[in-house]
Amino acid sequence: MNARARRGVFLVGAVGVFGYLMWGVAGLNGFGHHTQTALRYANGVVAAASPLRHASNAVTTVVMDVRGVDTAGEELLLLAAIVGMLMVLRKADDEEIVPARLEAPDRVGTGRSRATSVVAVSVAAAVGVLGLYIVAHGQLTPGGGFQGGVVLAAPSILLLIGARHETFERFHYGLAWEIVQAIAVTAFLGVGVAGLIEGRGFLANIVGPGSLGTVYSAGTIALLNVIAGPAVATAVVLAALQIYHQMIEIRRER
Image 1: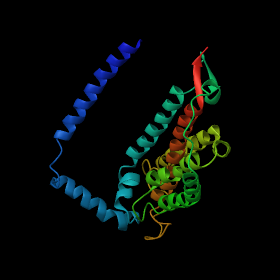
Image 2: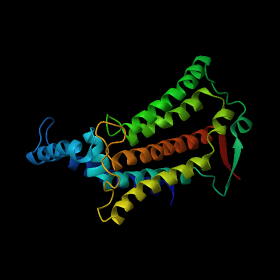
Image 3: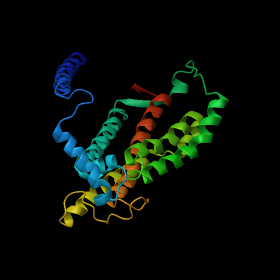
Image 4: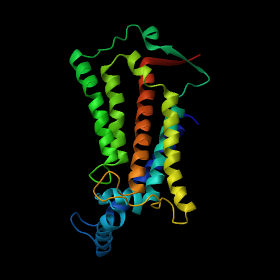
C-alpha cells in the first residue's frame, strides 16, 4: 500500500471515529447536571467504599474494584501500545544503524546546561520516592498505580535529561524493562484469575479488606495498585528508550 492509499484509509477511519465521538459527546448531560441513575450509582459507590472495601479513596475503588475489568483492559491496551511502538521503530531488514555523530557530524546538538543537569539528577531520587508513596497510598489518598506509575517513570526521564548518555544506558537495558512490563501485566491478570478460581468473580477481593485508614487496607485494591505502578512505569520508560535510540541513531536503507 502506497503513502496516498494509507492516508486515504487513515482519513476514512479518522472521520468515523471523530463522528462517533461527537455523537457520544452530544448525548452527555449539561455541565453540573446529572441523572437520578448516575446519582444513585455515585452514592452507592461512595457508601460502599469505606464499610465494604475499607478504602478511603472512592475513585480508586471504582477503578480497581467496581470496574476492575475495564482497568484490566486498559492494562492490555497499554501493553499493546508499547508493543506496537517497539515494532514500528524496530530495525528493518533493509536498514542499518549508524551513530548519528558519524553519519551527520555537522549536526551539532545544543547540549545541556550545568544547571539542568544538577537539578534533574538531584531530584530524581526524591521523585522516585514520591512515586512509591502515590502507588502505596492509592486506596487512601488521590493517586494509585496509574498515576504513581507515571511518577515512577520520571526519574528515568530526569536521568536522560541530566546525566551522561553512558550513565543513562547503564540503568536502562531495554530487555530488562520489557521483562518487568510482561511480569506486571501478567500479575495483574493473575490476580483477576485467582478470584475466578475462588469462585468469586474476576478481580474479586481475595486477600481480605484489612484495616481501614492504613496502608494495609482495601485488600486486592492495594495489591492491584502495587502491580499497576511498575506496569505503567515500564511502559513509559520503554517509550522513552525508543525515542532516545531514535535521537542517537540514523537508520538508512542499505
